[in-house]
Length: 348
View 1: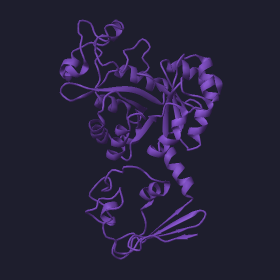
View 2: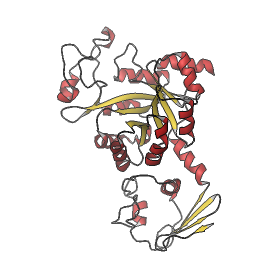
View 3: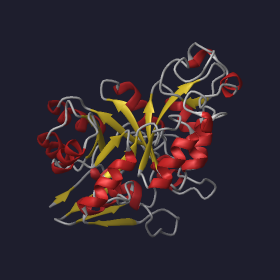
View 4: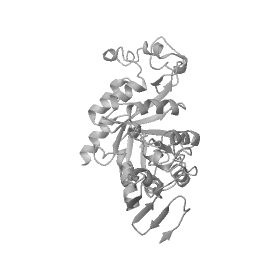
């Protein structure tokens, strides 16, 4: 089957397994493509030896697998003018799925990902570096963190909007304190003497600790997408972080995709009936859910579009974990990751 598109752009030739893209020797800037700046040509957009990444404007959406594959495979032979002469992509669906899976290394404990909710925080201050380190030590796949901004624009990991629950003798909202003021507060004293002088961590401290050791499940408590992306870029951890954002906040999901095409949004579609529409709008690699919405049918519907499912436990019992696994769910967020890992190892 041959399909002909605008001659000034390119020709596409399809058969059952192969896409061949032929690019003319002289190709002007294409303002119609959302992944290429209108002010420069295709060659300049894709090949730039002076930059770590190509000069690509953020993608508003990945409309289909072919566009995704073009971004990954445009490392083709060049002609005399230095422009790509052709690209041959075989087995589009297989390659596309392989790329999606690259973001999710095989689970460390059987066939399901273990996500430590607020870190492995039993007997340890939650969201602290110590709780994150514990999650790393016991072999979790991801650690869930909550992000909030301080009065002076720094980003820290605190679950509650106020510090009342965590410290003695202080009250008020996180956003009303500077980072310096928050760093003076002891969030370990209430937990026990062993944890005295534990401090609220910054996002930079968390990234430094987690890099290369554990994935991050980022719970966006406040709309801090541009600020977080700027920091994450510095650590080259775009693919190590999944962003929990409710599908009821499409503005935040779109902002994330616009500013960081490598970042991985994890929308929560709510009811199963919403999955198809969220798939159409976001093309997610992964969904978040909770036990009030999860079902075997929910998981099958998500998997039919090659989308993984991570669920928040409700009871945290072995019976609940068994049901979650039997439904084919891909990951469990738990308050007791050590017990879940023990359970998974016993099931092997």
